[in-house]
Length: 186
Image 1 (cartoon, rainbow, N blue to C red):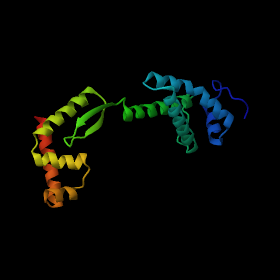
Image 2: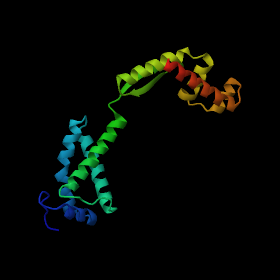
Image 3: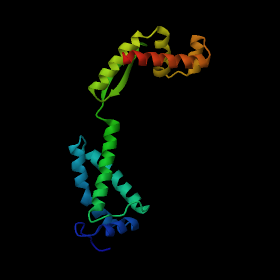
Image 4: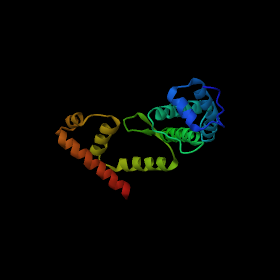
């Protein structure tokens, strides 16, 4: 394939280049779109390193979608827009999962500190409320819930500690959670 000028080349030539893995054309397509994605990521709480990773994933997704005939350009510029949209969505997904997290330390009443990742003041306030209401629960409920959720103990082990059947432990766990929910509604 001869040297392609991205701004003058119809999307269908690049689609064909993606299908045939034309290295020269793929490099041109890659280079022509990278800076737009990099600018977007950096302006939206990312770094140049994040942009490289996101763009590589987006370009690979574009290549795969073309290979599987999942993309057909609607008009000139559709390919650029599609690639940018993939990158943008990947970056937004990343932000949703990572979210510029803060660490909040909570004492779990076993004397250990737990680190809980939080994203905003509202969630921190909610956690504080849960912690306050948790203290109001009876001793058995607090102990059962701590063992199950924080200690990751099985209901079978919890039942043995309390001298209950496993079904009783399960029912009591449900009742304790419902009691905590009820306290949170008040």
